[in-house]
Length: 344
Image (cartoon, rainbow, N blue to C red; front, top):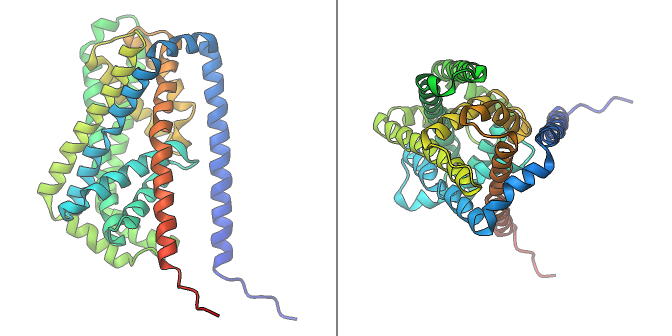
């Protein structure tokens, strides 16, 4: 009796199972790290630090963060060069991508893939959704590099304000080093990235989009420098606005600090999160980085852990409705595509 021939689906299914196992293991490790950090900062002190914000203050924080979908969606839409009527679809898809990266057991890469899918479900052509998203992510990371370098430079300039704190030098060097490594990766991707994307799409998702059409779309995008510059500026503004969210939380819980110092701390935090991009939602990593950076602003450990937890609570409040709306749209699309049952 001859052995059944192995189909192509078998290794793909095995690969997906391995990815799920890795994602679950990374999530579990991150949750353990988060629990240890909160315990280190003292649970009671963290709860006491959170309490002053109140329901109204937390709602204000949620609304401030939700407003970021406007510049992020506008940047993606600008890169894609789509009609103005599609602007809302890109804003919503960027919100879904952020929610997936923050809440689901995927890395930031998985969140970006879900964002592309959400844009396609909202009516954007698949190759446009994927190609413009890849280009937009590149610009977003480039803006983050500039933001991190500016934050590290500001902290170096203000060294006298934190004299005697060795963590300042370590944080600055870590932030600059991570930013430069990321910049090198971006430059490498500009030279060889398109071929790599074509190969990856052809191997991993042959039915998602035609690889040649996808890389053609990206080449067309990169031939529009004015749009790229506008999107880069929007992303820089969005990163600065995200720092306002942290500044607002600190002010509401009774620890106001100069905005530029908070923005500099957030810029270095982003570099640390990128270095640990395989950890879903940077669980534990974000909290550990805040503990290291807390002395820069003269904040106690319980306050920075409260800041981190409030940011996570904010992400849940925004992300759950976004992901539910995405799933509802997927269901509606599936029902529309189902063939009508013939009467018997």
